[in-house]
Length: 466
Ligand SMILES: [Zn+2]
Image (cartoon, rainbow, N blue to C red; front, side):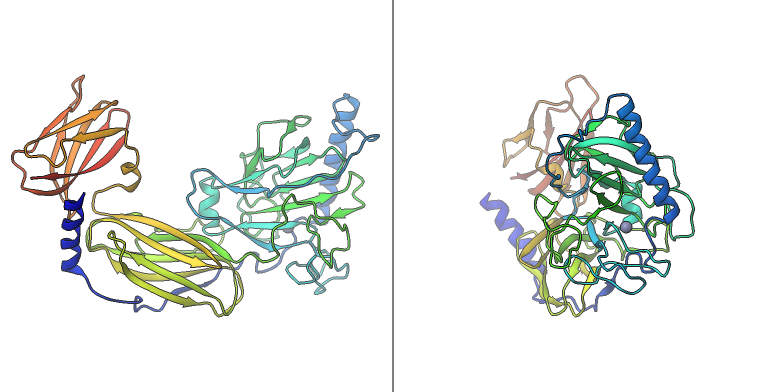
């Protein structure tokens, strides 16, 4: 191990230079969701939904399948957050809040959310926003296309209606197409709407089936009256639709005094949604074209790395600390970035660096007490693969032969030097696979050995040839 550190120090020493921050002025700014403030549900659609859910309830009642018992209502549900990132997403977080319920009954231009702020909307037609809107950030269309954001049941209950099969790339309110949605009735008779879901993504459960808290309902989409992928979450005390619920408790909540959340989130929650590296700046085309993310985590030696951060609820006058960290844990850059505006979602970056050392680099942001670290790799070493450790190589260091001890069949192996250059490739489809490698013709030094198994497994080891 000591030998490895000494060798890496030598490599780093050759390229070492001091710098506090990259010289580029950042690209970026605010990402505005629903800038035109369109209603999520038209009056016509609302009437249809009320009929649809009431009919569902009546049908289940007539079949003696209705779970809700009028004589034993119980207490109102306590919701968990109805949005989660899919397990394959490695962002820190992937949503922002655009609108709360509007408690001011006059419209237009009379806004009052539960916290006595104006994070809501109304329209000239007299609509006051009746739900919570949660949108995707960053890369909303890309995320929708790749099923990155899941809508889950905030509380257990019974599906009383669902609609699917509707167009899901709406960009404005000029549509009569209904949304895709799931409607759930809880044990106290209250009803939650989960709307704007992606076409064809809904749970296979049917009307009458029970769902548990946190159960998958669908993928966030932009069906119905929508300007981009988001969830409209709306809650009523019962199917008469006379009493709306705002799940948040707050001074200006005129509907209910208690919170309906298990753990009510703060009104503003400044934080880091993603810290990413790219081949070039990401491209945000007009709705509904998917973003070109240009996300890249594997770079060749001396390639240019482009760094961005994606924030939610950034607060004017606060600071994000940013670091680009070399494989030996020294800082290439370490600086404070000043935020001068209040934005619900924002992106900042375009800062570049040259990946001049092979190994695992880090791009790190600290904001509002939270640090998010993104690792990226330079040269042929794979960060993820290195952690599998189902295989060992010995002896290490070695003089002439490297033996491979493994439970899987190794079908190909590549030796890579510290500059990322491949210097030896071996493949073997025999029943035993590759069990040892002859290093006689390889110079002394530090190398990476990339191993691939017959079922697509891959792993990387470091070794020293003496
Ligand atoms: Zn809405």
